[in-house]
Image 1 (cartoon, rainbow, N blue to C red):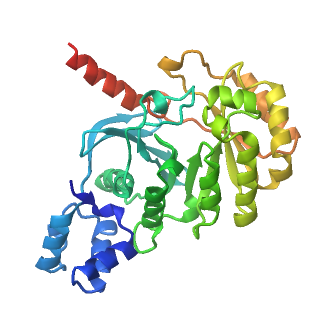
Image 2 (tube, rainbow, N blue to C red):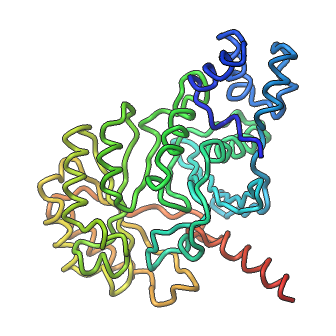
Image 3 (cartoon, rainbow, N blue to C red):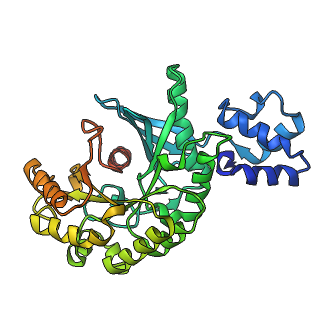
Length: 357
């Protein structure tokens, strides 16, 4: 199966073309056709010689995703279900904000992290996405915006879809370098956020990268007992190890980290947990922001409910009184399959039920 050309950084594309006997400037030309003119076929690259076009067609493909389902929310949020070349399904979400269009991308087919409240882990990971398949999500969404004819562009990216990005580290970093490249899509590093459930060795590695991408950590609980209960990754990387890695990141980057905290009714939303969270982050509060997330219910995890609005408010106010920067995430797409992985899970079940008669 041919790989997506979107998986190559400009340097990698340049090296590959030169290895094939092409001139160095060809890479810049191809790159411009891919990301500025956004052609859908190599044959449309009118200033590229036939030999180079043939090389590209024999070794790469541009299209690796096919739109299977598109859900449109009343608030303008669009959730895409894309079919990969091997038949697997992934989700990508387009959200409109006052500051521009943000896309949430998926990095794996399924997820092995196993958070007990999450729809993404209902189907275990079958494979990683390659860099081209991750970039391809941005390109398909940008194509959707291009077709509207308003001149809109993807300006922000959150790597918070299905899968653990740091469990697919090499492909993640290639993706980030492609979309951040100023000669291509030129999406600013400070407009890109990667979220991790807490793979501490990779947080340390990420701290040493020469790129200023934002980091978010899915914390969801302020103590080991509770976090292990809802996030099994905490057994491998307990809070103490996680905080040590975060301190290393903060020392290396001096950049703010966002801590994501999903609000689960009568599980992690008491004043007691708010006080524990404030204490946990006290020595790093100047570079911390807590994002309180109202829970999107998942049928298969019916033991969890969304925290009451008054409890979220008290939790928020408790953190603020302790000097912790925090906010409550604005909701998008609540009238469609809002929870990450929910649309994919439902679609696969639908197909299986049809097969089983």
